[in-house]
Image (cartoon, rainbow, N blue to C red; front, side, top):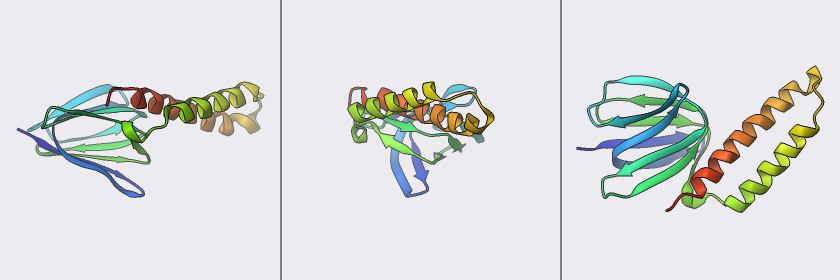
Length: 138
């Protein structure tokens, strides 16, 4: 038993493989999908995607927020970003996250900086996910 897992970003298809199971970061918590799952559409938050391939390997990817469309034989993940664990430079992500955290700490709480603050907080979440995924065993 298997299902097709496809991840699509604005740049094109980032991942397409046959898997036994996929675990995704839904807005209400992580959820797993197996073949013959009930059809549904779910919003996703930035997080780690765990893909159990049919050959027994587990592939990890850091994804941004987006949506997952689930059918009995396929999971299509639509996100702005997808970084497979082997594509992530963990040291660079640590450095960039530290810079964003420092810039966030330096911001005043004025109304003009609220949008900038939200962008930095989103950046920190995305980079933390990349660090998590990039640090996993490959």
